[in-house]
Each structure stands twice: as structure tokens, then as C-alpha cells.
Image (cartoon, rainbow, N blue to C red; front, side, top):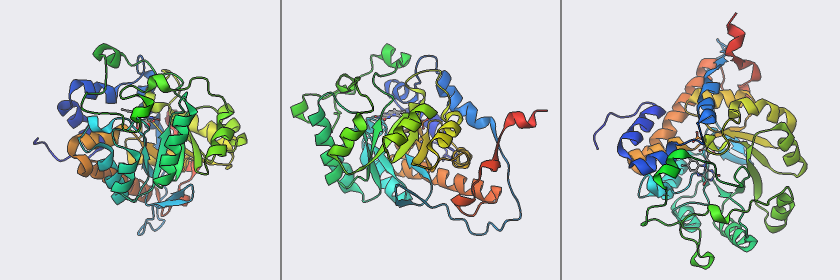
Length: 355
Ligand code: FNR
């Protein structure tokens, strides 16, 4: 497939739109309902202005940081997205290899089309496992044990999905996993080969956290927090991290953009656990803005799938390299030599400049 070499994330997006089957493209790009949150995830980043500092010797820039005590080379990680083999036959294995090479963290989706074991053995890089807690707790315990044995460092529990959001295109397309693929983490014993939504436990409460603590020593991140109220509860229940996420605008439409929800959460958490952000990150400057507002790292979902669609492992490597280059440039041009130099006053709302 001949095309110009991508130079920015939207080049990968445009390529994916052109070359992926419509069913797959629609599945990846959709937001819930009218896509208001999907759009806001981008617009809200664009409404923020950077306030760069100059003459600060940026000849050497260190982008590295840690998440839950593990070092990453730059603070842009990979969010869990289901069924990656729909984007490329190598799916999650290609992603894991590219993420390992880039020196960051991969979150493997419960809904992956490769097994936990196969992904773990394909690369030694840092990995988290994303979990939707199932009605049958034995299934969940079994998955946690697999993630523990495979060396995953944390469980990212998705808490914004007691039900699956309404995506019009998916409904119109009668979306289903193509028959040659399977949800690899569901064994025959669970009897499920295709859609896992029916397995999700919609009766979960905060009691989930002590229960998880009682079954695993892995660190726990809650994925899908959007309010200070829930952030405070998460801290009370002793989670290790909060991923501020609106699921890429795929769950409840008209919730705020994550970059707008982030400040109240950072302030409520008050340093008591790590805070991350995903949804709408497409530029190095987006990651920079999130760090300035108190996130420890950001995660990207769709860009990885567009990278996979472009060239499998190599495509994901290129996507991550662009994020890395752009983030480094954002640091250099704002006068930051290390991520500790990225400060709150380096970001302002555009309104501040409108009078
Ligand atoms: C997702 N996301 C997701 N989240 C999760 O917890 N488990 C999952 O299996 C999936 N699957 C999934 C599939 C696809 C196609 C997309 C686009 C997203 C949500 C994902 O982890 C993340 O929150 C968003 O993708 C972040 O937004 P961006 O970067 O895609 O804008």
C-alpha cells in the first residue's frame, strides 16, 4: 500500500480511514451518541495555551519518569484497546514489541485477541493488565493470576463501563468480531468466544477495591474517574493510581474532556496517589499540558490502532516515536530539561488572552 510517510498522528488516522474495512474503522473511531465528548477531548486541549520560558539551557533533555515505581523513557503510555488484530494480524503482539522498544508501558485489554501469555512472552517491557470485573468472580481471579504469572505490574480496573455506551455506527453495522478472531483471554470453560459485554458485572460498588486487595498484591489503578468526589473515594479506598478517562468519548456522551476534569481530580487527590490521563492525546503538547496540570503520564488509545493499521509493529513504533519527538520538542521549547520542570504556570486557558 503506497502512501506518503506519516509525519504526524493525523496522517496515521487518515491512512487508517482510507485502508481499513469500514466495519473496523467505524469501531475504532466512534464516540458515544452525538460525539460531543469525543470532539471536546480534542477542542479542550486546543483551548489551552502554552507559556514558554526561555534562556534556560535546554541542551540536554531528560523525558524519563516513573509510573508506580517503574521507569519509563517518556510519559506517554499505551491505553488498553480491545481486538487489536482487527487493525493488523499481529495485533497486541506487535504493539507489545513496539512499546517495549520505545521504553514505555503497554496496557493490555481484557478484550485482546492475543492471550496474556503470548503478549508477555513476546516482549519484556513494562505492562499493565486492564480488567473489567466479571459477574463470575472466579473468571476474574483466574485472569488476575494469569497477569501475575506473566509479570504484569498493575491491574487497571475499568470503572466507567457497567454498561457499554451507544455507538450509532456499531449499531448500524451490527458490529461483531470477525469470525477468524477470538477474544483470547476467555477460555472455553467460560463459554464465551465473542462479545464480552454480557459478562460485565454492573452491580459493582467501592467494595470492589478491598476485594481486589484481598486477591492480589498487584498495584491497582482505577480507569475512568472524572470527578473530585470519586477521586477522593479512590484515595480513601487506597488505590495506587487514577486514570482520568472518558473512554475516548465512547461511554457517556457530554461528560467533560479529561483535560478539563484533570485539575479538580489532581487537587482532590493531593498527591496521595498517582494521576494519569487519557482521551484525545494526539500531540506532544497535549501530553505536556496534562503533565503541567498534574498528570504523571498520559495514555493513548486510537493512535496505536492507526499505527497498527499502517504497518503493524513498525507502524506503532513510528507513532510512539512521533509522540516522543513532539514531547521532547515541547519540553525544549518551553524551557524544561526534566519532567519536574513542567509546571502549572506553563499552561493557561485561551480566555486569558482574549481581552
Ligand atoms: C477502547 N478503550 C478501552 N478501554 C478499556 O478499558 N478496555 C477496552 O477493552 C477498551 N477498548 C477500546 C477499543 C477501542 C477501539 C478504543 C478506541 C478504545 C478505551 C481506551 O482505553 C482509552 O480510554 C481511549 O481510547 C483513550 O482515548 P483516545 O486516545 O483513543 O482518544
